[in-house]
Length: 232
Image (cartoon, rainbow, N blue to C red):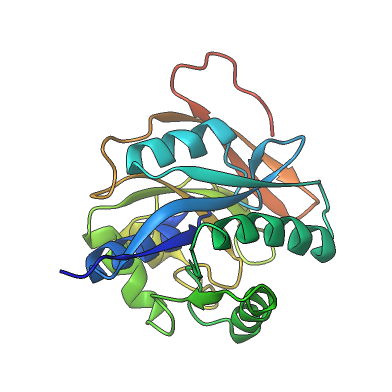
């Protein structure tokens, strides 16, 4: 059997990232040697998803894949993000990694943006779940035994009650018709805490749901052994 190609995976901690990793492992072609995650300084949480750093680390440990973090400032510009990401990716390129996998599904402009930035440093993008039906992907995620909780919702699409819910068939049936089942347009974000890829579940308790920027409802996930619930 030929040696697997070493790649890295852009990791948000959510369901699309997990499905992408599942596809990559099933392909028998690639070996994911690291997860790369953007973390917002000050909050010390996964950018946009609002998940605590410690839960990200436990997720990576349970997956048995190291996580490398790109720290960006609050309200970071595209220039800051691109510069810091380029520095991280260049490190992996020097180690012989030439491809980065993403969990994007159908946003053409986002894919073009990623591919253009990778091309600048001579790397390529992989999109294992590209153009798959989001309805099928969402149901497949659940049927495969993955478990996730909704950590953030955009209140221009969903109300507060959706934040903190379990991503299950009932959740999907309750979504308004104009909301993508995978939240591909940014309607919601998730944290995956169990599934076949994990050595053990990531334990947490739900904390407070808070509104940020007048638009995003975040549900704080607190490590199970933490007594004090910290507001986002």
